[in-house]
Length: 629
Image 1 (cartoon, rainbow, N blue to C red):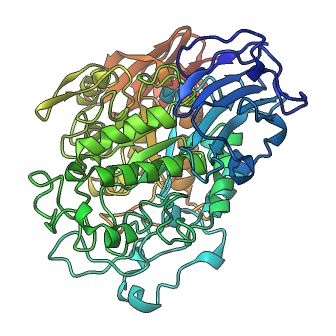
Image 2: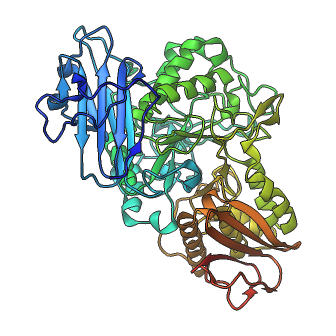
Image 3: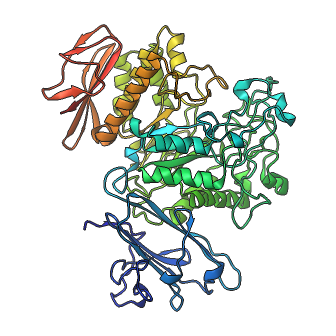
């Protein structure tokens, strides 16, 4: 059997007759001696976690001063209660766990232990991916293909949890586009089971923050705007700071309009069983006025100062709206600890694989560094090299820092990536609005594929490192819809499909496709760009766009050259570009044509998987992905 080692840090190796490796009584839940031999320190524990093609062996030994009270402790596997009594040796305070013949998926142990005097220990989390192939244990974050979901606007599978927009203060929100519309965790789970994402090659879901938000109406960001909005987007958190040891009085911290904790657990488990990762939006810059953390610790927050008109000159301490207190992390280490512990709880409780960090540039660097350090120490417990994105249990953070700040936080002690604003701007100009040429796109894209892998000056400091994985996008919830950009400049769905193909064939960084940009949803600025996703009644052009996204996404999933490869230009003109992506023995050619029909053919043996190009012809306003048959 081929073993894939997931050992935390190099440590001394006990002898084969070490009693901690011999389980009391053996049995199917226990490992045999020698299966897991190297233990490394993680907090109050020594840990070894070893995976095989269809098995795991885990040894956890408590080395603290107290005595574990197993009957008062909470141990889980994949968010479900796990009876570890038969695998526990009380004399050495050691858990020895083993399982064989496991189906491919993620398997994560969570130990929330207490000592006999009632002291809760820091939780120990042990994540493992089992199964061969890039979907499972051979995954790196350069293999990710992300689909962005606005939970409230995706699919309503459980009307029983819908919010009544006509009740109380919410009645002040009169624009339907700004009201809660019913999407929920069960809706996402249903589409996972239906294969909607598999058909597009999607292996990573980015969903809205699951934390409770205000259920009242909200003021606008622009001070002159008197319109009222709701918090369906999940950027007005009120349960920030929640942990099992500090519940802040909340029965549950999960947004009831999205579903229950069990609903979210099911979503994540269903995704993992199919080799999909789950990222949530993480909102840590601010809370809503209703948040109990704000009521208990108003001193942790800046004095009111509007962000409107001061997004850069007061970026750290400004308030997005009059109802969104901004954390003053720089002067309050206790606030940093409270929110970092809240982040760790989310990851461990819901078995998350990453965060999309909202408003990263508006937070003090001390918070970002503390979050990263805590994730390395308490989340990446089965990672050997924390500086690279190459192990399946690396926790990926992609931030949002617009206005030229994209490189700033991309460092080993901060985050692996940011949404790439430069990529968005150039793709929009060259493929959607046609305000720039294909030659401009080629001149940008080739160096940008690897631009963040080296350290370069930025905003008075430096950013970029070999572990960087940026987020490529041509649309998201804060931008005018891609199709509308095209239509506003005389184009249509053909340009959207060019952008889809380019997104899925840009290697090294991660494509992030916003829901609706797979079919061609229209929309102006917020709130018009956040319409409910549609799955039925699609027009011919929408069906063609969905088919293009599916074929291009699957091509990326099936070809490492499109994920990890090097891109080079084969031919470029002002309105026509052909490039090749190469990784080891895998080659893929891509043609993007804004011109009249062009004559170009790949080497013999290559076929266009999009079905647009044949006989040496690349039709007008079309793209081709040529792979070797």
